[in-house]
Length: 136
Length: 107
Image (cartoon, rainbow over all chains, first blue to last red; front, side, top):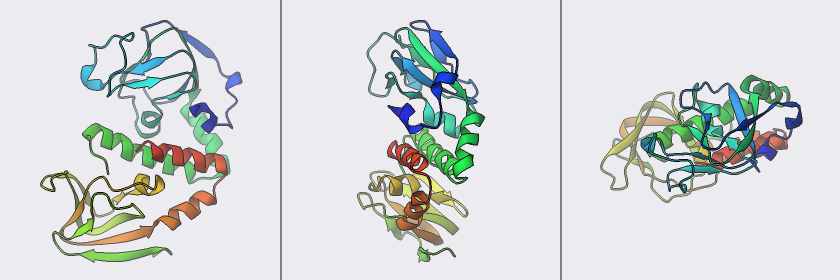
């Protein structure tokens, strides 16, 4: 479960949102100032090339990203971009928790000031490669 | 120059690494340029110029290079040994180093 990667966050203190089936949890262009944990349900980030053609209930394609409970949604984009680049759609009723990006960064910086910029740098490299279908 | 790093100088067209080789070092371009080639070794998919750093995710993931890299013109790079990065990670709290390794594994 990806949420376990951030054990210093007490998720119980953060408000929950219930997202209806087929609704967007993240919309392309939303600012990446919030990180979302999918606490319950399943979600899907359809391949951007098929944006608008994909129904959330459809099976995930090879280029889609499927999320199960416990996943951090579009984590790489949150770390590396100013705005989310892909929609994330609820495949069923979902419960999500949002946490402010700056809050996470502040918690990280308390222990080690290299960890956050290194994470962002690696995430940026991967995001850029995925965009150009280039792995380096 | 930090410990565990060395300068390397490549001639035009010389390979820095080839597809399938283990990624044990990451690099910063000091002068010249590095071209990352497609599978056929014909088209430059990406170029790295002076001041640009590359190879960290592959090194962290202890993976292989997915492409071949060659110098465009005489090119000087700083080569950083993986141990440099792993030592920095070892000095971090485990929570943070685990997170960074997880991010790298997504590459």
